[in-house]
Image (tube, rainbow, N blue to C red; front, side, top):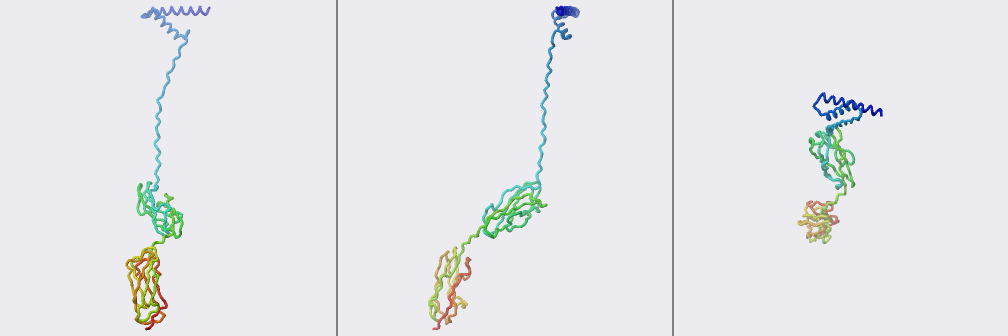
Length: 308
């Protein structure tokens, strides 16, 4: 109760002060002045009421712009190459000993010009008759293409062969490691060719008489696998005669496996002991390219002519 009485006394004193102020300054009605004075007094003294804490505004910062770092440039190499194409694909067949040319087409994708001291160089495997190295024949600038060609020869034995080649610069540095040529070597097929022979040769009578007529038969045969074309044949009554006793032109030639019989009659002007040889020839002018040139004759020995 005492506390309450003291509090009320304080409020009465305060009210009187406010009223006095209102009268002294003027311009406000009493009620308004009292309310204003009370509010000011409460604010100043901090007694009898709890002050409302004001909330500080939150400061929002603008987003920070991230500055992108410039891209890192990877320097292009001085020597670099791109494969474009090649000849003689892997597994190509060649006859034993057959010559061929292998070509690789490359593009210069580096920054340096390939001068004529750049080389195609054999690395490993089967060299196939190629050189140890071969210089470029012209300069090749960046972004230009060039053919690297090398002349090779199939080995003498049947089988699969592979040779690896490289490209080196003018300082001997290798920058193309793995270009190669791989072939299969096979037995050469026997070409189709004619082969002219004499399959029949006879004289009737076998021992003729001087001055009497004899009948001669010579059969030409093509034992080859191709047509022969035109050829000539000759018969010498004696191998020692300087000119033929009979001769024939086979204008149409002979097909492969074909034959033709040539005949003639002849009379010997002299007698000869039975120690001689009568001989016939085919393709006497070597008009025909044959698979066997060593079987173009046939002979009868011993041969002689009786005296009358």
